Length: 479
Image 1: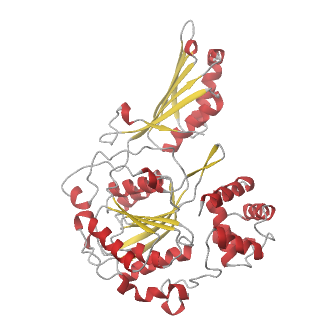
Image 2: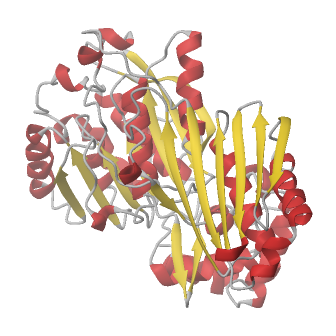
Image 3: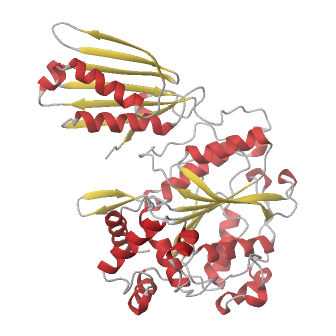
């Protein structure tokens, strides 16, 4: 969607206090458009949004003049979503549970019957990149899955790797605003660009790029949907998830203020693993702020992919938690593909800990003389985030200055004051959820209200890409 529309939906979400944000508003309008007579109960089932929240959103949309009545779009609302959200299907385009039913496809999707002709000549898979072509039927099903979800109409879509050529069928629907394909294999890009040109797909662009390297800034904070079939290793998955989060549109400026956008989509194809490895896979997804909205086992079928057992699962992910800028680091280790790991490279699947450093500066130095109040705020920030504190040591310096160190179940936390300099230093190291350390910093900033502050983050542990260097500290914003 265009920026003006996204700003408008974000403001509606703010007024309605909708936790799902602008994407939640779009979802409501999408289903009101496809199912004009839906009552709140049925709409709640479709969107996953609670009935009171739906009622609040509909009320705000009436006030804004988008819809005529709270329970339906009306002529005015219909024109608005067509113009601003670029929605096309004012009906359920795929009403059956069985996704492929060529006899019942809408007219604009009938070209999918000839998918084999459009996708013929795909380059042979490069197994060193963990490539294995999905069957034509699978590529068709992926495309229809996206149509069913409403994630092509008016969307900016990016493919992180596409040797299957799913981008071609998505482009042929003529529903997307923009399509981008990033791939490390020049043969794949040459093939895709040739097919796109032959079939007059004009809203698609291609980038030759290794995702282990930082992405060009033009691709960051831009897209609504990511589609990816990453290397079949957890290291590869974590890299792709990090890049997916960077390219998805997660912030927007409205006048002088920046707002966080949540709910952007990621369609992930990944092979089934033994139980312990599957736990790591799902932890990696959660680590990067995504939630699994849907998982379809064995959705993807491949030609000759013995490493996968010729099948992989399809995950439908929502980005629900936006960690502040984690930086555009290059991975220290290039080994993300199965063949490389089989040579004995041992890479941890996740960092051992998350290290946060905060600096708070004050014009009013007297605030920093209140040691008991500082101590109370420090402990409150830890307890309120669910961090378990085993013990606390504190010391008062003379003539002034104060230090408190908390021994945590998950590591440590420390606070130091220098009243003569109007300065507080905070150091938090947690070995469980990233969000706990981040929330401690947010609470401290909110409670202390410094005139100036800076916050930094570093992944810690053996063989991490940061290696503890101060040059690799990543600055984060807490507002």
